Figure 1 (cartoon, rainbow, N blue to C red):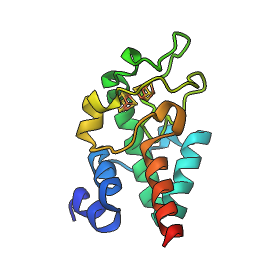
Figure 2: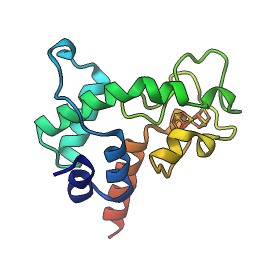
Figure 3: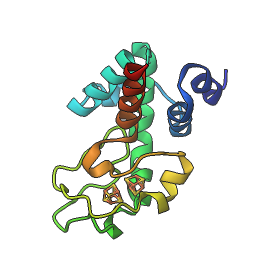
Figure 4: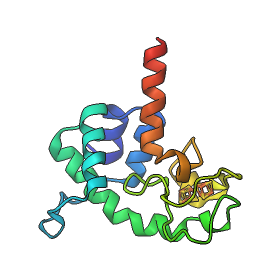
Length: 148
Ligand code: SF4
Ligand code: SF4
């Protein structure tokens, strides 16, 4: 099964597409054997909230790592009115980044103009203050499920 088909059958709508675009490649390599706290948190989300197996989640984390430099390079956050000069991180939409530790005020979001946003068919924004697309989409689905 192609990776995109895999997520379209096991993922959920836009979230599945976003993850499929991030892609699946190699399993978690020995060189990255010690996961960070953020990686552990994302692993937990993938397994507990999206029903992924440990092996699937590890493979996804590995590919998130591979794609992170590209996301951060293409990120346009530095041109955003909410950006602050003390921030050194970019790519807040990415599962392995999430909320900024520095940006706290929402003064406008230009994610909609970002090539990554368009490429991954993202639907949220203000990732620096609200969390990564993956987290926001899971939260939204949980709220919808609770509302019946
Ligand atoms: S969508 Fe937003 S947070 Fe993500 S890379 Fe683009 S500008 Fe940065
Ligand atoms: S995530 Fe959106 S609001 Fe935050 S700095 Fe990037 S473009 Fe601006």
